[in-house]
Length: 74
Image (cartoon, rainbow, N blue to C red; front, side):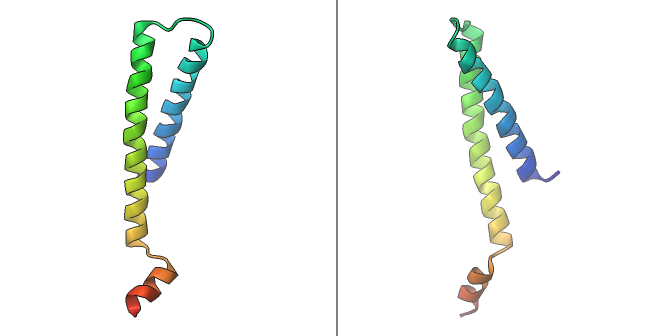
């Protein structure tokens, strides 16, 4: 599995966990630990999305599209 897929898998995992906590919050008061966990997950998701954007940029830099190759050839 490549790094990009691992990052997306982590994003999915943390997003699902955070969604479960928000759904629970719709039915009852979350504990302090659950509220803290939502904050941790949100912070981690910001980091993972940034990492994913960087991975995409690096991939695109190393594999320019045909159009990009034509621009550089001019």
